[in-house]
Image 1: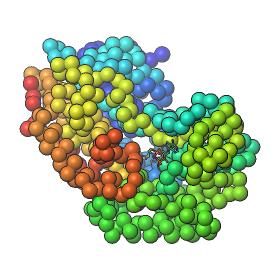
Image 2 (image 1 turned 180 degrees about the horizontal axis):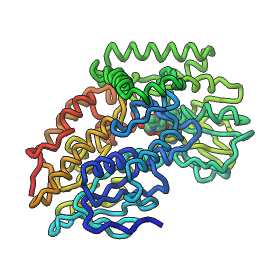
Image 3 (image 1 turned 90 degrees about the vertical axis):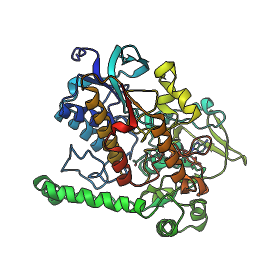
Image 4 (image 1 turned 30 degrees about the vertical axis):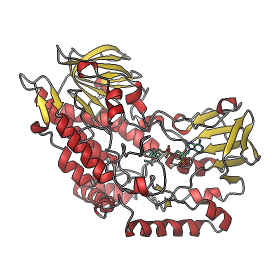
Length: 490
Ligand code: N01
């Protein structure tokens, strides 16, 4: 049985028990801020890493960089962490840092409303109504599975599931499996399930750019050296960080000589792995590298060459009870259909009503112009801090660095709110507009808009609403410390 709910109003209600929510909780405990609760709609700790359990699920950022700087782990077993190890790390971190009594799992946020008279957020949640002085949202953007817009999808008679909601009860051995999608999830899952299948058809709409992964186990010597010598571990993390950050410093956001060099590496990777010219042509992207998320894999191309695997590049005309019919009349008989079709980017913020000052909703505010000051705060929504908010995603480095920066910004706000007489922090509209204009200017002519592709990085109007168009260092410099001058304090 979970502990009784703490006294209200909470100092802060944290939504999401993934990397960001847990990081916020740990920093609140360290700073003595409370009482606080962490809610998550999922039944386990880990957010995206609890939900995505598809075979082969892993991170394409090295382990020592993809972990919290204030909760390090010396004994990562591989250079790139796999989902079970990341999920275990997050569970252990929550326990070690005393977060268990603060967690309420299986209890999502249902709605939020700012009560001006009381200067409190009123929340409807899975554990009932709650009031809080501040809310920190660690809801993330990549967790509402997107269904492909393919006619007849519901007619399919066999098991059909999304990579982010893997059905481990469905046996795949000896089955005819269809996989729709060629993003990061597909590239990871395909090599794992292809050897089990009688036949596997990959429905590819757009071939991805794939770079070598070069994953390897971390040796026992490395693990024990990292355990005994924290400085050595820190230096390793720094080296990884700067290797990734170099891309930003070299101007990765624009098509440049760097783009051509990276494409040459990816083309060599493809040519080395795929000798068949016709297949190689199918797998060669027709847009510039970096326009969509660049994938890293050493086993994707080999898996596509298995005799039981077909890469289907035609358009799916319709899904039927027994398979897929292509526009050219080809029929693919299928027993199981796997949707590796990504996420609905409107995500949580479109689903959870959030009403700020004057009853204005966040969704409505964002219809006029989406975005947040430093990706964290939105004018008219006092004492609300977003982690992994708009324009803070990264294609070149570890998200954890961005999350930690946002957590420190929010912590600055929570500290201010704990001072006598301070009730509300509302970002000044002019600070928000200045920030959004700068992001828009930096995204203009970026590779995401000029690279010849369409990805989830852009909104329906073709504007970059997902990514931070600069270096992590620049973001950290601007956003880490909450500056009073950017906020109306009442
Ligand atoms: O999803 P995606 P994902 N017919 O949106 C295709 C993170 N992540 O789950 O390219 C046919 O990238 C669609 O085709 P197209 C990471 O940030 C990280 O793979 O639009 N195909 C595309 O190929 C990543 O960016 C890791 O033409 C259809 C695919 O579905 C994000 O999650 C691991 C279709 C969707 O690709 C999402 O990745 C996994 C249709 N009707 C995920 N509709 C790490 O390693 C869609 N598609 C950290």
